[in-house]
Structure formats: structure tokens, C-alpha cells
Length: 396
Image (cartoon, rainbow, N blue to C red; front, top):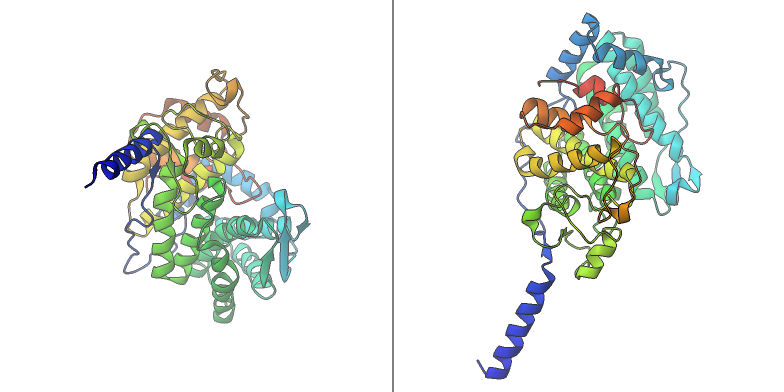
């Protein structure tokens, strides 16, 4: 090699090393199950049986969580669904043309499906069916800038509800099931399947949660593998570990390459510690959405025979612990978000905490304190609901 070329190559190599930017491989291996397990989106039949037993025993926190569920508007048997052919959602749902209606009807269907399973009273199942049938008969599209996120939020709840009702309850006619499946495949899946690598990470994580749920309901192995593949690259790009190097990993396809671009993407944060999230310095609320979807996807995959917890447990436990610590009131040091964090972790902790602390036995004192303080978790009115009921201390 000529000496000038050798020097140029050496200089380029040194410059790249100095940036210490790690790009996650585009598509790590994923493995859809040969046979899908149902119900298997977020909650499994053994988990539901555990919940029913605890509620009927009057045991806490499950009885209190279920009482809160039944008292919520989402459990109302007089609810009138408000389907639209086109749901239009701009930034922060402005305009809001059907956005709240769709999300809340989907949460209501899930709420009613849980009420059905615990009480075994068919009136709750029938109401859930009527809501799902109403939307599948009408919805055709999501539009405006928040369409991918709106689609993800709604589909995450729809699939949880549909899995429980289809596989445990009587009364959902074959035509209704087929129409609902067509809705998921044609209206929802195309909007979320490819992800959004350049957005704040909670978007893509929730989109993958929806895509995995749809894949399970449809028994679509290709859609499942694609969603899990994106998930496995997004998690390392959303939660930092010191083993990543000087800078966080970047999402494949995001176009985020330089040190300054990474700092900008991490909302101005330039000091990186175990458990820091790409959205920590934005606010804890959106960070919580991302952390919840990470746990929810891992839980669904586990029900399908794929254990993702070994590869995400260190990131998730550090992230839950770090954010719980400051949510509990500890003052932020000057190096973290300029010394000021925007708290607001909602009902996002139970699934990850149960998996890591209870099933895997990982000590998580800060997270435990916050979980116990916030019980029973209700709904965030977007895509999370009743996780104390479904996952508190659940060994299955």
C-alpha cells in the first residue's frame, strides 16, 4: 500500500475510533414459535388463572386492583363505542379526530376482557366483543403526524383484549373474528411494522409492541420475526450501559452518526451512566412508555417460548432503578439533565419489576419502593392498564 494511502487510512480509522459510535446490527436473529400460544399477548392463561384466584380470595393487591378496574369507566356495560373510518392525530393529538375515542375504546375492550376472565360473567365478554366489532366494521386508516404512534397505542390494547376473548370466551362470531383480523392486518400492521428509527425511542418500542401483538393474534411468523428483530436493536439504542463504550449505541437506519448528533438525540445529555434512557432528559413520562413496552414485548415473547430477558435484563433493571430513584424524590445531580429532571413515571413498572425482581430474583430496592407506593396501577389512558392486577407477584 502506498505510504500516503496508508496514512490516510490510519487517520480515518483513528477518527472513527475517537467518535466511539456503536451502531447496532440491523437485524439480529429472531425466532417465531412453530406454534403460537393463546391467549399470549402480555398475559397468558396461567397468569390469568393466578389473577382470578387471588381476586376471589380477596388477596391484596389484586383485589384492590380489580375493584379499581370495575369502578373505572372502561368497565362500563353502557359504554357506546365511537368508531371512525379515519382517525386523524397530529402532534400531541392536535387535531384529535377520534384519537382519544379509539385509544379508550381499545382500553375498554381490554378492561372488559379482564373483567370477563375474573368474574366469568359473559356480559363483560359480550361488551368487549361489541366494541371490537364496532371498530372493525368502520376503521380504515390513521392519518397526520402521530398516526404511527396512535396506531401502536390502540393496537397494543386491541390485541390484548382480542386474545383473551377469542381464546377463552364464548360469543365472538367467526365473521367478527375474521373482520377484526383483517382490520389488524390491513389498517394497523402496515403503520407499525417498519418502525421509526429516527424518532424518540418510545415510538418505535410501542410500535413493536403493537406489531408483536398483531403477529401473535394473526399467527404471522414473518411479522413476529420482523418486530422482534427491530426490538432487539432498539433496546440497546434506548438504554445505555457502560459496556457500550463512551457513547450510546444508535438505532439502525436513524442517520444519527456523530457524537454531537447523539447528544442532541439524547436531549442534550453528554454524561452517560448505566440505565440512562434516550428520553431521560426529555421527561420521565415518555421514558416510562418506552420502558413499559420493552417489558411488555419481552413478556409476550416469553409466552411464545422465546426468552428475551437474558439479553435485556441488565439494561432494564438499571433503567427502572435509576428512574425510580429520582421519581422517589432524590435530587438530580448537575451532570444529569442539567440538574433538573421532569418526573412523571406512570403505571409502567409492574411487568418489568415482576419479571426481574420476582421471577429472576434481581435485587431492585428503589424500584420495589416505587412500585409499592404506586399500587394499584390503573391506566395511562394511552395503552397501559391494570398491570398491578395482571403482573404483581405473578409467578407464571
